[in-house]
Image 1 (cartoon, helix red, strand yellow):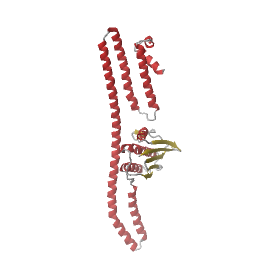
Image 2: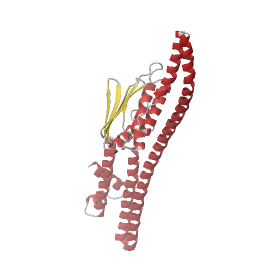
Image 3: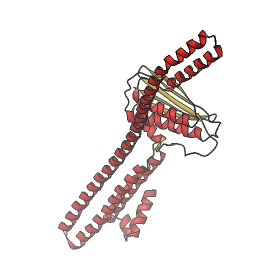
Image 4: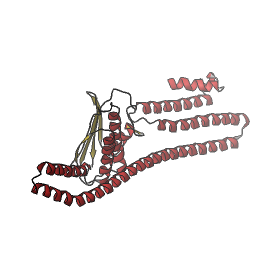
Length: 325
């Protein structure tokens, strides 16, 4: 009904009388067609806004298609009127063919723009994922150098402790042993699940959180192979972890809370859960995760036949994801 009113108003403003719109004539055909197109467009808008995966880009793709259809109707109606009055059949046929070609071109161009946007989004995501992988491998190289330097110093530490023990200088020996343990402890901070992609994402997040004074408590158990693309892993794990770190960083210095991250595989099911306290200060709006919304995470989960649950309870924000791998 609402679309009929809009259609009647638009056509009446274009000079078509209400008698023609409601009578048995070409005007009635134009009126019905216009109303149905408006009705379809309104349905698309309602679906987009009520759908949990609302994307404003989809709305921008629908607008030119509707405008092209409406413009074609008005042009063909004007040409049809000319044909009725003057009998210019060839002109009407050529105009109809041209309008058909224009509609096909606009539809094709809109689809190309949509695919280009998706490709650009995936490329940007892959670039960020590759950047994290590069940092991960740089960290591995740095730790290998650190390990070589440590093993080089072990003999010196052991010789020093032997001399201190032989001279019964216990406090100094304990001090040397403590220094040696401290050097070894730095080697245990690197995450190693056996999956290089996951390791890169988790180590990047752990280092980023550590630089901000935030602790991430990991509970990890994975097989080396996961049947999930690296890009999807980055979007799902990397983005939710960035979001949790950002939320914890909003807390005052010296009172940074910890993040809980569970990633465990059981048979062919991957369980992932990350939770963080909710700050009482304003941060980026919910779902705006590191350039990609929470809806992109949901889209990746759905694409991998998974399930996602987002809960807020007792001032704790928790994202739980189950994936078939």
